[in-house]
Image 1: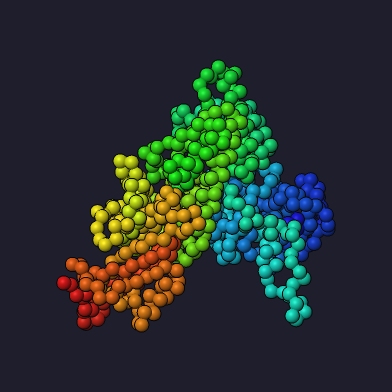
Image 2: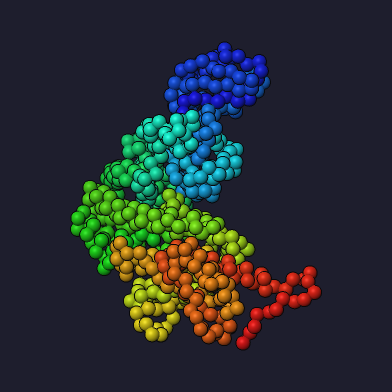
Length: 582
C-alpha cells in the first residue's frame, strides 16, 4: 500500500512541483512522479511514508490554486471490501466505532494502523463489496466529534486472488496461491475474536494511572501493545471509574497487572490502607457459564489462583447496564492469574455465542443485531452504556426487523426442571429478563400430558420476542440443561387464524416444506384441530434458536400477507368476505 494517487492536479503542475512539496514535508518516495492530465501517481518508500503523505497533504496543501487530494492508489479489480478510515477522533471509544461500522454491513476485520498523527486510522474489511461501498458513501466526509472522517479504498488482495484468472492458459488457474505476506490475507478472519477487558478502579488512583501529561498511560499502552480508554467523564462524582483495555488476551493481562501495581504503589505513598481488589466487568450473558453448575467453575478458579471471587447481584443490572462486577481479592500476582482464567472463560462463551449468531443471522432480513444488545459484538454490551438498545415499548412504528410492531404471543416449552432457574431468586431473573426484552414473560401452571415440560408465554413485538427467546435459550445452556456439545432445541407454538392455516401449509404441503428447508426448523400444523374461541389453530415449530426465530418470522410474513388480502378494497364495488367467527 505504498503507491499513491494524487488528484485535483492543476494543468500547470510539474514533476518538479511535486518533488518540492514532498521534500518540504520530508516524505520519502522511491520513484518518479507519473504525471497525467488532472492527476498523478507516485511510489512511497514504505507504508508509513504513504500514510504521512495522505495525512499532511490531502485537502491541506494547494498547488497552483487547487487543493491536492491524496489517497492510496487502488486498481479497480482490488476496490472490493477493504477501506481505510482516517481522521477518527483520538478519544473515540472502540465500542462506538464498531457500532458505527456495523450499520453498513458485517465487519470481518478492523485493525488500527500506527501513525504519527493525533487522530486514529483503521483498516476495515467488510463481508461484501456493496457493504464497503455503502460505508464509503455514508462515512466519507461525515462529522464525528468535530472531525471529518476520510474514507478511501485500499488494495484488497483477496479480491484479486478470488477474481477470474485473466489471460491464463486454458485449463490452468491463477499462478498458484497468493503470497502469504499479502496484506489482505493478513485480515486473520479465523483468529480468536478479541474482546476488551473492562475493569473498575477507585477514582483517586486515576491520576496516577494517567501520569504527568499522560506519560504513564502512554508507556503502558506502548509496552503492552494495547489501546486503553479511561472513562473519566462517566459517573461524575462516583467512587470508581471504568477502564477499557483493547488488546490481545496477553496484552490485556499485562496492562491490567501494571495498573494494579501502579494503584498499590500510589496507595502506599498516600497511606491508603484499604485493600484494593481487582474489579472486572463482564456482560451478564456470560456470567452463568463463568460460575458453572453449582459454582464449580468459579470455585476451581479460586482454588487454582489462591483468590477470593465474588460477583455482583442480578438486582444491580439495568437495561442500560448489563454488566456484572466480578471482584477478585488476593495478592497482585494471584489476581493477575485469576483475571486470565476469568477472561478466558468469558472469551470462550463469547466466541461460542458469536459462532451461533453468525451461523444464521444473515437469514433474518433486516435484523439489527447491534440494536438488540444481546452480544458485545466487539461493542454493544461491553461498553459502559447501552444507549444503542431501545427501551421497552420504544420500538415505534418500525422495528429493526422491518416488520409490524404489533404484539405477538409465542408459547415456548422448556424443561420443567429449569423453571426455578428461569424465575430466579424471588422472581428476579424473570423480572430482569422481561424488563430487558420489553416483553411480558409468564410461566404457565403445570398441565397437559407431558409433566417434563412447562409452557412459557411470551408477549411482545418481534424484537422483544427475539431478545426474550434468545435469553431463555441461552439460560438453559448456561445452567447445563443441555450437554456441552448439545444444541439447545425447543418447541414453540404460535396461533394463527384457522382460515390462514392452509396458507402456512401450502398446496400439497409445499409452503411448509419450503419453510423447513429454509429454516432448518421442524414446522407442523397438526391436522383435525378444533379452532379455539378466537377461531385460531396452533402451528408447532421445533429447532435451535435461529431456526425457531426464522420460522416464526416467515410465518408472521405469511399472516401479514393474508391480513392485507382480507382488507376491503375501497376501489371495488364489492366487499372482501370477512373471516368467519365462531
